[in-house]
Length: 425
Ligand code: FES
Ligand SMILES: [Fe+2]
Image 1 (tube, rainbow, N blue to C red):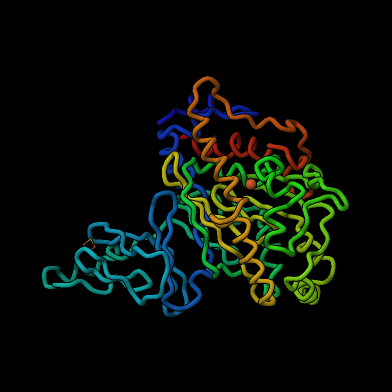
Image 2: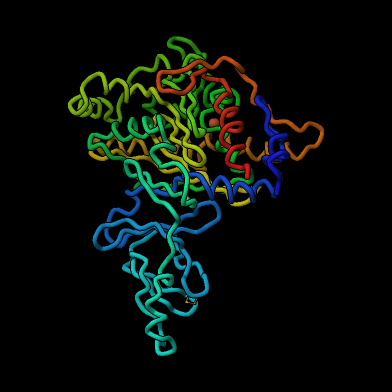
């Protein structure tokens, strides 16, 4: 455990100490104080659409079971038997009216109530009425437009306050669906990355890396984008050069959230029913709001500490720490409720071509995250630098700050204002 004074020496206005990424003690504290205190995204309600549907996940390292009961209510519970603590459900998702513990056979309903105990004569009626035998629940659960967040701390700001202006990114995403809802119902791509969880989050709104880490895609061949076809071009029209990323801008807000602005000069994509989708949205929202949500004024967004929306809302990404040097990343294609089938099929194909383990975009990133984890073992130089466009921030019209697209200020703000504050006793 580090005292506040020690933590303060590790975070400076333009850099953080490499220990943040490689020290198991820091990781333990993060599980306690970041994932144990802040609002953390856990699942989308559309993952349990029908009565008795369930999914399992984690908050920090604690297992969660999320269900929809027969009356349609969603429950977020710890995935832990009330008898001796065995993880109750071992499968990723499914449909079941109840759960039986594999150890001594205690039975639970989908709503988490203890339904029955074998050999019940060994227990008094009094004992079996104890509600603490039911599945325990995290201190606070709340949701915004289907995105379920959990806080393990009974106190602290509301979800609404935590999200603040980044709710606009969730709104833009959901409003792109003709029925106003997104569906996370196309499975997910899962990675176990041999790197610290923050390396993936540091990358959430990082435009600086794109021309280099993704050179094979952004060069004149445009390999991955040309492979799946129909997507927007990332070249300046009539040239072989990638678009300039600085004019896109990057925006940061309280509590560590941020987003990147629109890709300039990107024409409407051809095919994939984009024109039909656009017509449906104009009907629902009018031309101006449709322009806003479809020109991707928020191209990538990051909701600290563990959720990002990437690539014009084709997927959301859940970052799940396992250990100081191991992270699970889940990449969920986003389907738009009410959209033409061709659009939703394109979304799945696009994520497969850019962010599946068989792609060449997310795999570029994973390769550099693992190399960062290795490089940060070196003792000669202790600092991880976030100094780009230092001091170029100016107030934006949403109560946050904006800066040139390749600025690292969102990370400066995140570590200095959010990470340090939450990690301090
Ligand atoms: S641990 Fe679950 S029934 Fe014993
Ligand atoms: Fe990347």
